[in-house]
Amino acid sequence: MPRGKRRIHLLRAAQEVFVQHGYHAAAMDEIAVRAGVSKPVLYQHFPGKLELYLALIDTATDELQARVHRALAATDDNKQRVIAAVNAYFEFVDDQSGLYRLLFESDLANDPAVRDRLDRLTEASSTEISAIISEDTGLSHEESALLAVGLIGIAQVTARYWLSADGSIPRTTAAELVATLGWRGIRGFPRREHPDDQIT
Image 1 (cartoon, helix red, strand yellow):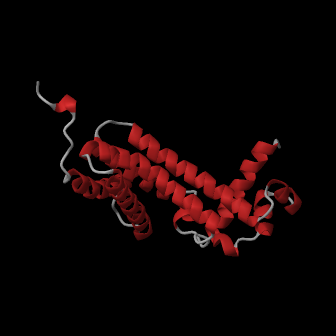
Image 2 (tube, rainbow, N blue to C red):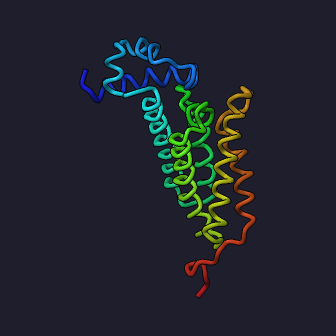
Image 3 (spheres, rainbow, N blue to C red):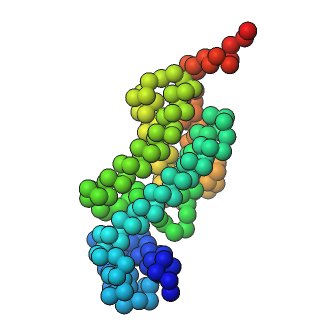
């Protein structure tokens, strides 16, 4: 198997083990068995368990960030942008892979390398969202960033709650309910008057 494909195969096996057991209880032996390789082959690609875990964290953060970016770029309507951004989080946690657990339920969240990656994810997503808020409302960068992080926090926590509650609310309906809460809050700020909006 080519090295690139082998690495992907190993990451998938490791993801299953880490999602099932968490970082501390996961064993490289089990990951090797799950991948159908020897431990030396596993160590050829990843020097240790932490490096393997961080590679998966990188995969998860890249995927979620890409989902949020696509959601925000899909429309110029800010209400729909909010709905799409919140839905991106709901879709991410609803994925059968359970990859979201590595980001939002990690038992290694206080490790500096893991925390750095999670902070960068929040910063990247909030930067995109805060730019839209600032442009639309005229709020300062700092104020817009605070609101953006708040919206991200609401989306993340409610998406995880929705999944764990295992209720009857369809995902898109749940996401729209939460997005409506966020949108009504953002909409309450006076909209900045753009030159194009003025009547001449």
